[in-house]
Length: 601
Image (cartoon, rainbow, N blue to C red; front, side):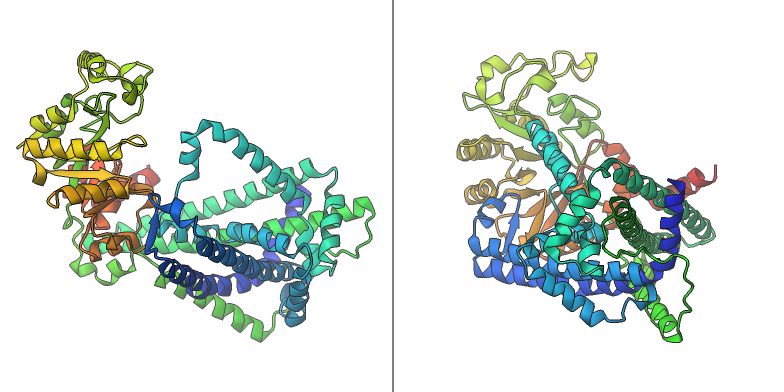
């Protein structure tokens, strides 16, 4: 295993610079040309079909449109084709080293011709997924710029989905290993595409465990090496920052340098990871061919040659390095703070603090005790969840079932309020809250009137939406709190109906992801987005339209500082006191010194 690793690392050292000469232009091309073009085509097609945006609230209807589906298929095939060409060039870089651009036209032409076969579409689709892995960081950034559904959360909400997903992953891994050598065979050895699938399967026969072991071992080695490099770079950055006296400049320097170092190291790590895995593929291909006596005239990467770099090649390498530096600096989210550091005030923006589920860290969630705690801890607002019982009473409850908070295995919609009224909603949290009851919405409004504003999230079952909206609005009007509440929902139709009933009530759309011009929804006054999906572009888009943005659920000091610096309008938190301290005090200084202390003690 060590001999194999040494061979792979030696080959990586020789070929990394040539891989970078491909990946740096590819990164810039994807960022500024290909991805924007794909988004432009998708946006145009969506507008032509009458869709300005899609979110988790309307994604079902969007993807039932045949033209939008065809557009997405076209984009996948286009990206798959681009990734296929890139992979061919990467394989050539590893195989031919500094002669990678020699005969480039013929090599790419031959690769494209290979696609015109029954297996062409298969290899393009495979290339799409391989390309996602190669540019994983770029894809994550792209998805996070619009928000995206967290797959693990979806699976966690649907335990029965775990088995088929697991089986699908196992099948995908098997197919991936079985076709592992298709690219080097077709791209570098001139083997016809159809034949390369059969040859790859023969070469892999009996070597699955060995291949997995070698891939894992080499990847762990590369990860450890880059983790050590990352730690050293971050340590040097922190030590430089502590000698910066001005607090605004200190913050700007720390964020700019850390963001730049992060992007550079992640890019180089990704390139190294791609390179070493392709080297492993090339070496395994040769070894397994030797063992199986498969005569393909296969050649492994030449790790012993010492070809002298030409002056032209050195100029190209220097130019690529300058391009990478320029790209990282131009895409640095914190660089503007460095340029404008004299006017930066880290505590200028003070988002409103909304206590989550009343104040669920200090008292049982969605109870009057929790609301009392939110008032005592000086939260600006309290968020509550409302569901409807079988007989139409509105109660404060987050889950569909009473099992977690009351120990009763029944759904809210199955029981009348008289059956629910005596449930103990406090003992699960702490003995001191034994006997705490589930309040109605009317009781909560009465309790909070004149004390704190409420964000009321409507949680309706299918078919309840209209009735729930009418009852919620009735209770709000009877309490005289139209201007002291925010009505929130995942449903666009619910919020549309709320606005139709009362234009003075503030509405809030809760999102997991969004694409397109969401700020143009006229019956939504604010947007509530989960912390992990919030990005600067989303915040700017929403705030520019004159609407507000709320982020949930933010508890630790680092994330509180982050959302404050993004200039969001409000945060939902389980810890109002901590949130106020971080949002209103010099959290930047605290964060820096804690980081320094963690690294130096």
